[in-house]
Structure formats: C-alpha cells, structure tokens
Image (cartoon, rainbow, N blue to C red):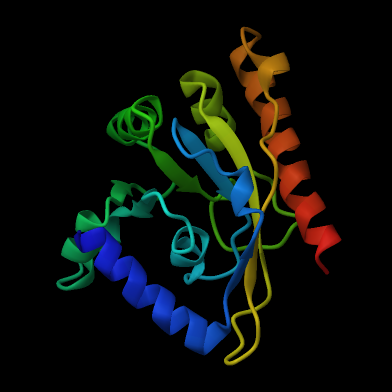
Length: 192
C-alpha cells in the first residue's frame, strides 16, 4: 500500500515536471524474476525506471542514503536495500538473488554510477541474471530531465543469456555484461 501510494505521488510529479513516458512495457513479464538493466544519467533514474511499471521494482541504494533522517526510512519501506560503495557485500548479493529467485523485479544500473555510454560496465547485473534465471530486460532513459520537456524510458525485449550458462564464471559474466550493455545502447541509438 505504501509503495503504491509513493509510486503514484512520484509519478504525478514526474509527469508534470518531466512529461514522462514509457515505451515497451509489454516486454516486462507479468510474473517471475525480472532484472531491469538501465543506463544511468541522474539521481532521478531509479524512480523513472520503476514508476510506470505495475509491479514493485526494488533497487540497491548506496548505504549512506539509509542513514539520512527522512529519506532512509522511506527508501527502506519502498524495498530498497543497502550496498557499500566500491563493492557489494555478501548480504547485498544474497538479498538481490532472493528478490529475483522469489519472482520479484530488481532494477540495476550496470555502469554502477552516473556516467557516459563509454563507461566500462560492471559484471554484477550479468552475475545476478545468470545465478537467478531471471528475465533480463534492458531499458534506456532518453532525455535529460529538463523541466517541462519529455523524458522517456524505453524497455526492450528480454536479453537471451542462455548461451552463457554453465561456463567459466568471470569470462562468462563479462561476455553477458557486454550483451546486456549492447541491448541498452541499441535502445539509446534507436531513440535519439
């Protein structure tokens, strides 16, 4: 109930301020584990990726945010869970895999931080996908959050990672990450 209320409130403000739109929502499975993998251009991205989806989307958030007096309790109630900067703890990995294996949706930014398309993506998204069998949905935020101008999120078809299962862990995760990032960059190219 709390999640739906906050989602509706944020959606209202994003629609007024950024004229938000979504395309490709039909690619998101109605049930089962889903890993949403998106580019990352702003601190406004996590709500943008999740507020137009009917199902709850959970995110990793930097640990410092959970210590903020008002924000910390709110993001915890929205289903976010902490991750330390510079590395992911075993607890964060367990939480992420549990969400996906129990049929939830988790949003992740493979680049790890706000940066350009040229950034080297981290292997976390591919590792979660390969260890959980979750559907991998690439997404791209198109626009720059300029007031009263359209910003949209485009969801692409699932990325097929079946060829990477059961292979050498590090090499496989890197190849799978490249495939995920290619799908994200393809959406960006097609929408510019």
